[in-house]
Length: 316
Image (cartoon, rainbow, N blue to C red; front, side):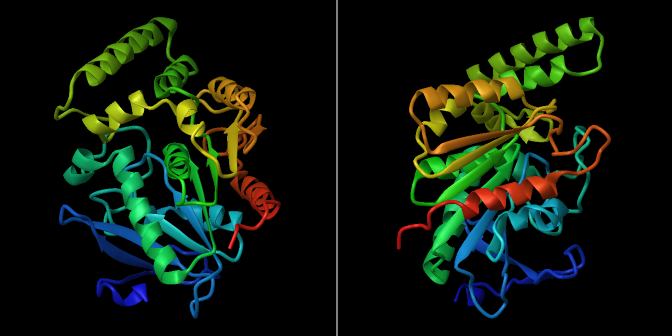
């Protein structure tokens, strides 16, 4: 069993709901000598469940181990499943949690800033999912992600053979630059400041795309993260997905463009991608909250569970 693979196990009990089973940190070596920190919460501590729910966090510089929303809400997207979360390169449970207010984080690990990017996250998830499929024999693996995590879930689904179904919420439209520009346009700044910010962003995007590498750090992300984010064609990515996919978008989202998401999904449907379902939640924001801050992630997670429950069982 994989529990005996590594001696470094850390119980994470204080931040879990009272009814949850313990979640453990495991370390899986990477080829470069570093280690992937991942966390497995079993539905039944005595045995592996039939299904594995993989939840990918967003773009914050925090350990996923401290993400309360996953355990409070998103784990219920697949009741009865074991839950897998994976930290980003250079991050593990000892990093103190800090709310993401958009500012630079002084203690964001240098290894994370150098090495975290979409390709790296997918390699890490693929390594852990492959290990757990072999060791635990999960019959079904479902990936769920929000914001940057939605893009990661889409990347996992596009690879084929890793997950049997996936859900992406508030993950943006075809081009990341359009989503960032939407965030500027919907902000409260005066029109002159918005115009200046848009011009600066376009110049920044050109610099990143034309420069192979640099020591750039912006919004707690390094050069390679920005290069991959700006280059990714998410519509082309979703054209590669053959497994069932639910795309969820909040209509009051100011972090990504709901219109861009709707256009992308419409183009995919016209291209004959019948495996993709789209659901909009008009009044909710990027964090799936009402305008007054009331959380609706629990209700959305229940809708996710109903969607998964209506899928045909995976082939043996």
